[in-house]
Length: 233
Image (cartoon, rainbow, N blue to C red; front, side, top):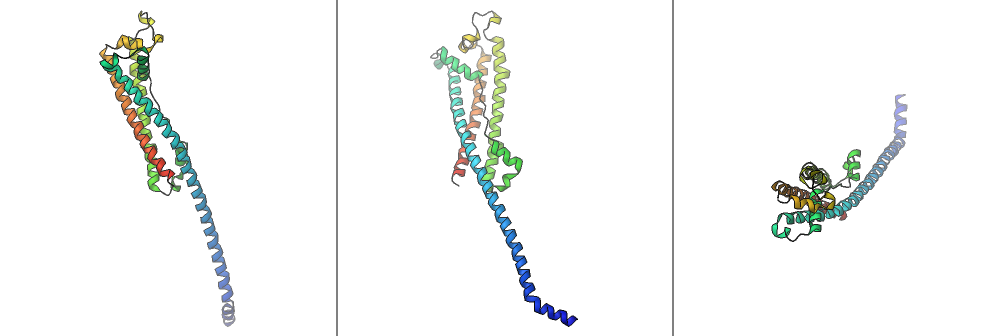
C-alpha cells in the first residue's frame, strides 16, 4: 500500500505542482490586480483633491489681494487724519471715507471645503508628497488661523471701543447737538478730533489694521507659493 501511494505521488507530482502553480499564480494575479485598482483609485482621488485645492486657493488668492488693497488704503486714509498737514487738505468726503475705515473691519473667509473633507475623511494619507501636505497643513492651520484671529481682534476693537466711545461722545440729537451722525462721519470726526482719547483710538485702529494686513500678506505669500507648486505638477 505504501509503495502504491508512493508510486501515485510520483506519477501525479507534475500535475499537482502544475495545479499548485496555477492556484498561486491566480491568487497572486488577483492580489496584484486588486492592488493596481486600489492604487489607480487612490491616485485619481489624490489628483481630484489637488485640483480642488488649486481651484479654492485661486479664489483665496484673489480675495486676499482685494483685502490687502482695501486695508492698505484704509491705513493710508487713517494716517492722513492724524497728520496735521494731510488733515488740512481733507474735505468732508475724504474724512467720511477715512471714518468708514475706522468704524469698519475686514473679515477673510477662506475656501476650506476641500481641506475640511481631507481632514474628515482621513484622505491626507493619499497625498504622496509629504512636503506638499505639510505646506497645505501649515497654510490652513497656521496662516489662515492667524488671519482669522486678527479679524476677531479688529472686529472686537471696533465694536467694543470705537463705537461705544462715539455713541457716548459723538454729536447726536440725544446730546442736544444740531448735527447728527446721518449727516456724515466727518461731523463726528470734526467734533472729536481734538480729543486725545479719540485720536488714541484712531492710532490703535491703525495698529490693529497693520497687524491684520501683515497676516493677510503672509497668507497671500503662502497661497501663491502653494499654488505655484500645485500648478507645476
